Image (cartoon, rainbow over all chains, first blue to last red; front, side, top):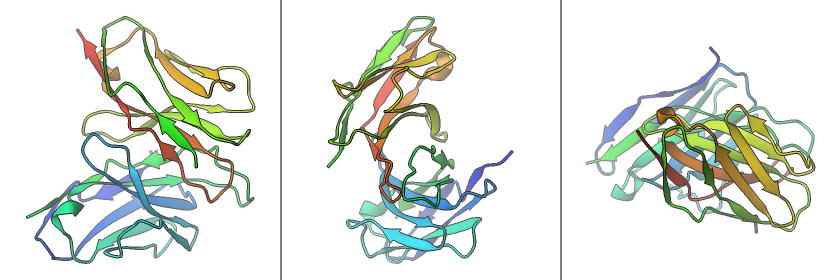
Length: 118
Length: 115
C-alpha cells in the first residue's frame, strides 16, 4: 500500500545532541510537510517542500532544518535539541496542483516520531 | 487571518449513539476547503471528510456527515452509530485555495466512546 513512513517511531536524544528524523513516501506526492505536535494540541507546521522549493514558517526556530534529497525522502534535522523540543513530529504529504489555485487535496500523514530529550 | 475554533475539548458518547462535534471558523474568503481529521491514540492522523465551500450539499462518508452552514461559518461533524474505533482526537481544519497557504487546524476535540 502506498504510504508515508516515518523512522524511527521513537527517538531519544540528549540535550544539545543533534538528531535527524526521516520520512519517506511511496505516494509520489510533490509536497512534503513537517509538523510538531505537543500533547493534546493541534499540529504546528514547521516547514514544507513544494517540489524542491523550501518554505519555512516564520516562527520555526533556527534550530530546525530540513532536507529533501529527492521526491520520496525528507529529513528533519534538529541541531541542538532543547527540552522544549520534546514532541511528536509528523510528516505529511499531498499532491498539489501546479496552478496557483489548489488546496483541496488532503494531507496524508505518517505515524509520527516521538522525540524525547534527556 | 483565518481561525478555526473547536469549542468542545472533550466529548463522550455511548456506543451506537450519535454525536456531533462542533467547529466554527473565521474567514473573509468565499472560496475555501474544510476538513475533519481523526487522530486515534498513538496512530496516524487520517482524513475523515472534506467539504468544498462552493458546494451547498453536505459531504457524507458512510457514518460520518457534516452540517456545513456557510453563512454561519459552521462546519460540524456528525458520527452516527458510534463505534469503539471512533475514539480519537478530531481536528477541524481550514484551507484557502491559494497553493502556498497552509492548513489551519482547530485545537481538537477528544471523543470518548462508552461501551
